[in-house]
Amino acid sequence: MKGFNTLSVHAGELRDKRFGNIITPIFLNATFLTPNDTDNAYIDKISGKPFLYTRNGNPTIQALEEKYASLENAKYGLSFSSGMSAISSSLLSILKNGDKVLTIYELYGQTLNFFLNLLPNYGVKVDFISIDKLNELDMISEKCKLIYVESITNPKLKVADLESLGKLTKDLGIYLVVDATFASPYNQRPLEFNASISIHSGTKYIVGHNDVTIGFASFNSEELYKTIAEKRKMFGGVPDPLQAYLALRGMKTLGLRVERQNYNALEVAKFLENHSKVKGVYYPGLQSSPYFSIAKRVLKGFGAVVSFEVKSEECATKVLKNVKVIQAAPSLGGVESLITRPVDTSHSSIPEEIKKALNITPELLRLSVGIEDVEDLIEDLDKALSSCA
Image (cartoon, rainbow, N blue to C red; front, side, top):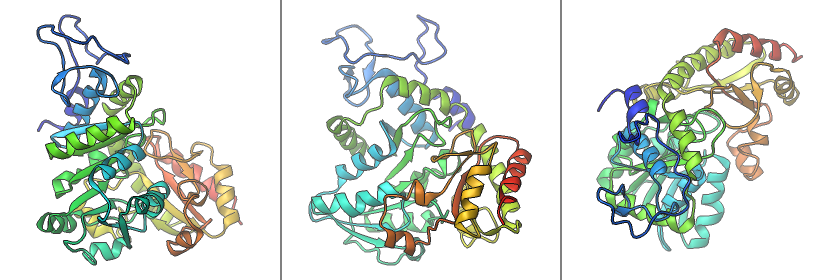
């Protein structure tokens, strides 16, 4: 395997010496010449035949998927129109009536709704457990067909012990599906911990510029790859070629961006931990974090999301209104620093009793740290926090 940044730049690129192109072209084709009996016709790797229709496959999209798979150190990769499409297509390819799933309470809001409100309609039994209990390998048995976990949870930044979890699920023959969005392939590659599927909302770190909505999944199993590709074709959650081109471009700087974001986030977390207006900081890179020892084992870097609690809802509102360099907006992983209140955005749709149980309060803010100069970010936060009584 070549270095991460080398793969980011060169892997998967569709270069044709007849044209001398360095950048993969955008094939804005809905349909392709069929039958195509041309010698050396370019082949769709899913079908093993020349391209037919972009919902089935497209050269630009295939180049993107090859680059993504290389960064995951995976044999196969697929892209989707969004992260939720990657989740739903992957899980609905595996699960059927009567199957049992184990997942965690600490999930992104729409993912939680998928497990709470959609899978049961298909006859799938879903059991929930805290990530701490899951890390203790509690409730795991061969009766469970699939375990789904976020490797770093949203928004409290708890860390799954993929090392222990991957060993046990492999021994028991259970599918392990990991949403590693908050880690990115630079900080973690779940398939290396025996995960069956690694999933990303590529909108976040992978593309990194807050201008594309896209999802990804990687596998080492050809059977999973072909099965999920078929479901993707059926559900229609395929990115368009322009999305794929922008994602290809963004992915080239993934390592450079995340390396800087890892550094910035740790410095910001240290600053917040010592601020008089902050009553709690959640970041796995802090030695005070209860997840620090796990994070050191399963992550190369700690990511760029820092969550923190201020002393009142009024203070949280003032911080959102008074930041200048940092933008008050949802999402994460981009070059711009963004701050949001999860009760209003990522977790607005989940039941109040679950928010209460997870201690996701109006005082909690989630900061996605970008690539700006860290001194400017700290100054911006300090001024915004000074507006609180």
